[in-house]
Image (cartoon, rainbow, N blue to C red; front, side, top):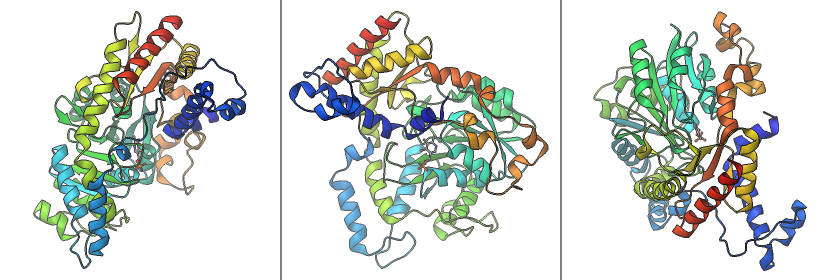
Length: 454
Ligand SMILES: *Cc1c(COP(=O)(O)O)cnc(C)c1O
């Protein structure tokens, strides 16, 4: 994996979008548009001017309407953008936390400034610290690694499998007596196989942190993601589902985890709104951060939450239509989905026989204006230079100074299965606003390209 590739993967959608728009311009050049893009790219391609542009776009903003506008105006007019006090008795963040926890089916919720902040709070909530090991999938976003290192604990990677999520068997293999937590990350809109993960974790007294940043609104066997393990986190950054640009949340049923997370998000102090929910305080003050959510954020998220079900329903409808259109192709290997009903339909995923076939497949799908790419939005963490070299902000940082921390070896050899899975999979993004014509075009393109490469 070259640095270039990793950067491209980390940039995820943004890069995809640019490349995709460029290729769309090229395809329109027959109509006199995009000639410049074609010259810039130095390529001549047959054009398909009758095919519509396919751009999945950013999901949350496609649903912005007067509800967000009204809620934002209320904050402006009240003169109270701060959640705890102000002339207009602020309630946006408070109500969002209550409604969000109710939606997820948990007792408690706390709104924070980002998904990364939510992970730091969850890890503080679980009491993770030096000497502890935390199991993290080898393919996920940076924050699942940094939250462990920030706590002074040791990240131990487990491979992903054909679910594109953590392999429950490799998780079991990577456990040691020092394992305190496993982070089950529901990547790319699809739930992890939670039953075996929960069973192994419970047997060994390991806590489960669900990272639902890429699967807000998804479920597993009828339970909303984030409500199955001990604590769940979400991101409301623009690439995710409901969005306020930036934002995050932590949910849990455990009053002690909740109080610790709420304290960590507010310098270690606790406000009445949180102890009112738990009945009483159980935890003493300790040093925390400021990850408090503003009322503007709470206002937008309140409006967005009311649309989460329809966002998921539209995405799912389109994803299922595409899956149905390709599932009977000879030799096709689709993403293994432990509970397809809980998939939010962020994309459609299938596997080619090797990396070369994958790259050709992506190229040919893009020529047909289909938004195809490698897996996006995450990083192959054990192959990153800063991870391999165990770099921290201080040389005496506890994470890698223990005997097991100095012994552990990262790098490509530590995550072969993940690299193989990553190298074979094709992603086709799904949009909430796709029409039947677009779904059909994508199905036809995948059928043609897959048949020609199989
Ligand atoms: C986006 C993301 C995060 C971090 O969320 P931010 O709001 O960007 O800080 C954490 N985990 C996963 C899996 C993500 O995709």
